[in-house]
Length: 220
Image 1: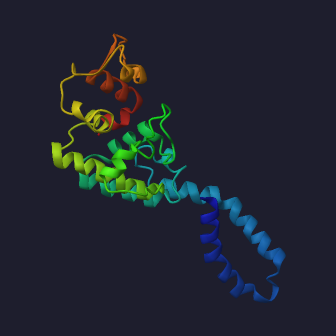
Image 2: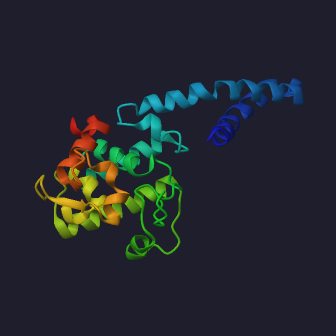
């Protein structure tokens, strides 16, 4: 990200410098100008993040986005179209991938991407060669969630949004609905979600876990 910001900043500043100081613009001067710009980059980046600082978890997402502003604007646009708070979308992505588009499922399922798409999901969405650019991945996230809404209706809570990805059949179910039972393989893979350690992962467990991890998503 620094290289892209440096290129853009140099492109904007060096022609002006050349016009004013053309007779004395030596290679040493160019080097000094570049060093000054590089030293200012953290301030440029922080200012860009501050511009969208109202978006939940944007500072974390900014580590993976070439332009935090472009990323934030796209998240807000998608959330508006899906009729959900943008904080829900940000918390969902963080819970699945931490905003790292190339993160692979640690259990070896083959899932990868912002919300850990399975290869079969990419195929169902008509994506044969997925891009792992973070803005392109947002398009896939929107397509997946819009498909869910078209088939099942409006997403009414952040817990249900999480379930859209984790276990779609549980969306809209009551708190006692069980997703995974011990001693199944699925339970072992998700035992960290069994918040009361009773051998079952329920909708209530998911809500407790998500409220603890993402309180900002429940304030919306």
